[in-house]
Amino acid sequence: MRGGPSVLGIVLAGGAGKRLMPLTADRAKPAVTFGGTYRLVDFVLSNLVNGDVMKVCVLTQYKSHSLDRHVTTTWRMSSLLGNYVTPVPAQQRLGPRWYLGSADAILQSLNLVHDERPDYIAVFGADHVYRMDPRQMLAQHVEHGAGVTVAGIKVPRAEASSFGVITPGGDGIRVERFLEKPADPPGLPDDPTKVFASMGNYLFSTKTLLDALQEDAEDTQSVHDMGGSILPRLTAEGVAQVYDFDTNHVPGETVRDHGYWRDVGTLEAYYEAHMDLVSDQPAFNLDNRRWPIYTHPGQLPPAKIAAGGIVGESVVSPGCVIRGQVTRSVLSPGVVVDSGAVVQGSVLHDNVRVGRGAIVRGAVLDKNVDVPPGATIGVNPDRDRELYTVSLGGVIALGKGQRVE
Image 1 (tube, one colour):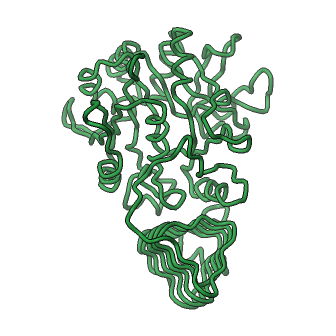
Image 2 (cartoon, rainbow, N blue to C red):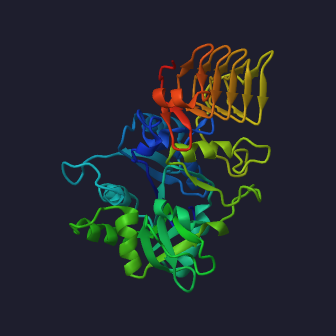
Image 3 (cartoon, rainbow, N blue to C red):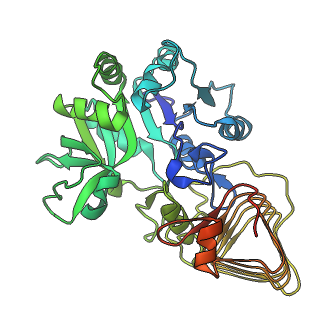
């Protein structure tokens, strides 16, 4: 930030994403396609860059080739101004071992911090869908002199076991307790049915983070995780504060999509987040040109709705050709829906082809899946469970290039 405090962005993008299988069978979770043309990592990178954090390191590890390629070909910043977004693979800088956890990933990458010598370090997750202005979080962090500020969002107490849970102190800002994925956490004082869930976004004063990482590295009982190790440690020291995401406002937001944040770590959540995009007044509006989500534009012609093609409440990317019927669906570039085919409530990744007379309902099809003429997906639940991955909620998922019976 020119004229202000210097901030280094560190994006944790090494997750395996096992709960998103088969979409993560061949790629890291942050590289999974979302919203037609984007990758999940584009959301956090867009938030940081829109918020003037212009030096960003993306820490990768698991099946990172497509993620590395996307970052290097898409996120090209001004070298004249010294700005960059760069992928940083695991390098075993501290010995012959890979990352033991998210805290260890940063510990093994401290050369990045020593090179830049920033005043503050923004450590953000790479696989959430949201808009956020990090400058507002930084302003609170600086004003109150925190060692670490963690972004929190109110979620139903029944969902708390999926998140790190923040118990705020009497002032509403100091973190009194930080519990990683607790089974039975206390509710908020003003609403016992909800808790403050950690969004996985942390803002550190640099010395605080360096000291905490060193202490954690020496702790043989630690799991070396940001949420499971570093935040409880700094909470106990009394230097942790919470930033209420609901107070964050970005230019161009609507009343409907203000405060939208989704952890899309499961097939169910991934599918539901896509359904949030397709209505006339979407729960999350991709078309906010005052706070854009950036990605690689590709080199494809505009989408074509051919004779007989019908499209309603859908997101259709460039290069698509629609000759059949598409409703409440999200189509990535190059998708073809042939005559007589029906696609309903589905997410189709790049270059999927749905043959003449085929039916696809309630499904997520990864890239290069070819649905033969007359085939059905989402019509016979018992048959789908025999052939494909089906979530507990009934979302059908096919992996990259998977054969359709």
